[in-house]
Image (cartoon, rainbow, N blue to C red):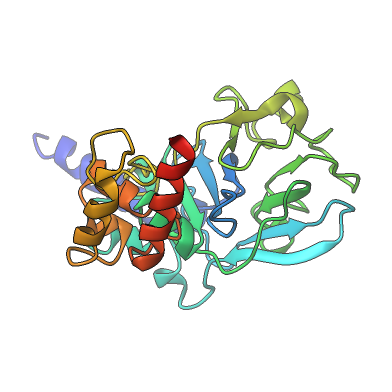
Length: 293
């Protein structure tokens, strides 16, 4: 009789192990942020998701679809690989998880999933879970995640979408478009916004109510948070740009060739925000100093 609890626990573990593959899915997700770029870095873009339940890690084959202002398809911003399935689910599919430290499916609730262009990775100094190869339209368009038609997990259509700006295409069931952010801002979801399959009558599913411009704070599945550190042209890292920074820019050329290779406070040495550190940043710093004076 004393062995009964241990036997029951072992059976419970076996049962859970058997049901995880069947129930691990992808559709209890929301779009949490969309970053459409900077004026100086228009291709630094990302879409960030947030899981609203455990086990939402079977992302294999799932796309981030994009539409123009009229609702015409622009293809995909990025798509998770399809095969082999065991390598195309989280955390295995994410480059951010290559060295471990990422949650397993049961612990994935409220975790973010980041699809970002290489330029965005370098600008924010963060590793994306999916490297995006497409483009998000600006100032108007629509970005979506997921395609329920590809799998039996959910009904039909995308899992979540955010339309913005002057979008006039079909956006059901996500209502009116959100306000288009200024370049450098992100479209940020209200933290109370719920997934359409959990709360189909949530008023915040209407994009105009559920999203607002805010600060970009990309976060990947590993939990790393990216930021645009440094003041453009401030190679010294003092927080201000002055004539001394022109000489400091020259010194930086012998120190690093990428902004992410510099200490956080001195990443402003990438004065033109192209993520590289080279002679062009000296010219950009001179212009900044001249304009300020």
